[in-house]
Length: 356
Image (cartoon, rainbow, N blue to C red; front, side):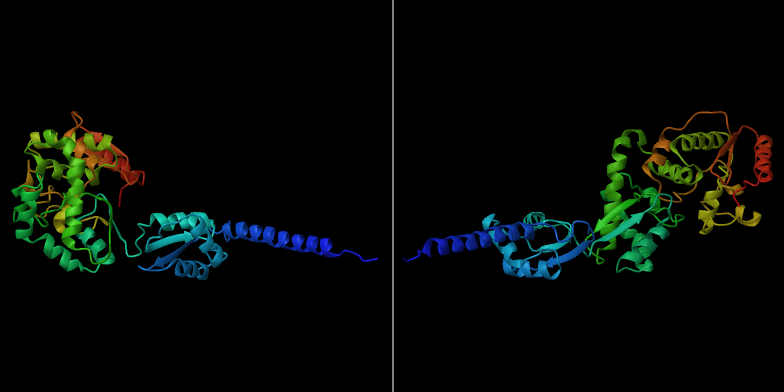
């Protein structure tokens, strides 16, 4: 009797191929999953122009961002991915293959050479110059020389409505002091020109200042100067508006503004320690403590204020106060007479809250 084995062999062959097929499907979908679900560390990948799909897959595998190059190529073909853009990318091992391909299709704005410059409110031009020196290919002196270039300043005056000939006063240390908008700015690389940095900041100031244009009128230099003082004297919009009102009361009474922060700026020293009586009485166009500044504003701004301080200079709080003093915690005390003012100062010192 002859035993027919052919159907049995065909059965095992079929089972074998089914195992291969299901294993391949399982492997394919396994390779679509993230290399490491928990790893969110960003990995930089640079894809040069002209890189093929095979080349991209090889790079991703070398960076351990995908599990299999062949599966990567199959996915790209079966999903009809037209192109993957040459660029710099920040990818993660926690991304699935589909997420990675989607990012490569869209392209990336990531720039590894990006320069981020943060200019803080209340800082001086000299502080800004140090920030530029630290993060770009320009020196401190280069920045200062351009900022003090009168021909360049005249061009800017013709370009921006809020820059006037008042900033050309020879007694002003830095013509653009006070007019550069504090903010965080992004530039393509360290070779960004100093002029580009300056115009970017001025354009931002234009944007922030435009809603107040009618209120400012022809007193822009006055408001910027006042704003720069209360930027350093106050801590919030409410007390800055009160301080502006007090300063205007003092000007109307033909008194000195008596602002210590103007003395520091006039001497070009940092506000890190107390000054001597001689320094406080020193004569220059900024120091509102000196006798030659009775009833006068400083010749120009003493720092670069934020828009809140400019708003305070435009909308002062009316009061009968003529004096104010702050303790080391930033609390501000107001008074109407010199006697009351001196008493408050002594109380602050007795409590150990004097600023120095």
